[in-house]
Length: 266
Image (cartoon, rainbow, N blue to C red; front, side, top):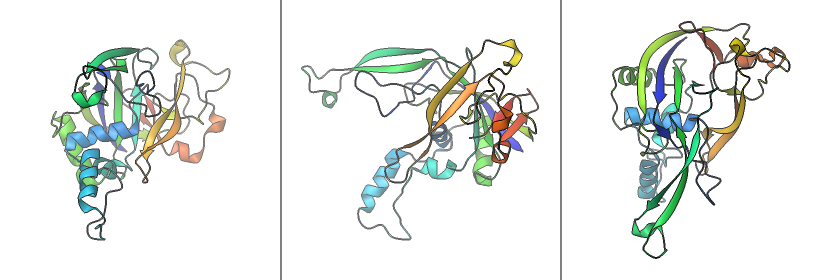
């Protein structure tokens, strides 16, 4: 199978968790599928949430079969079936997080005297991932070819960013690569489904310090209100428990012959 591979990085990143905002806005530990789809959509100039809202408001109650409402933003409609693999870098796949405090001085942001709102956001510091977008039919051929052309030649319709426009993204080392199926995987070098647990007492890859990170990350949007659909994903350098492997898992696993990475496509 062929895939588009590229390095994605930035000085900072912020992928907002929508469920906590009492003291500060917190971030997911890694770029997730929905945010990645949004970044790819920005590269191709696809519409987002604003365009979806404006379209639906303009239709009002006059949506028809030939002019329907948009249940999802355009970027998600185009990439919703895309298979991607996300390989974190950094210290055992973990990026430092720090709370940043700044002022929002627009008048409508706060009812406090002076119209100043103190904002606290948790940012990732110097994140970097290797991203794979599979050419497996999940994305239309024309879209995939255009994406491959844009990414490999550093072109973009809109500036791609890491969760928010305060955090510009750097895309580098893009190329098309051939991936081969995996029959008997020992380790997985990307984010993977949580049911592929680590083998208790198993080996750690390349004698590294043992690491295991699990987090509920967005993997899709629901049609009712575009809320996140969450699933637990894991990143670990521990040997996997092969007894937990299913046939459908093997269908999602490939090896990059260039570097020997074993990838799980989510």
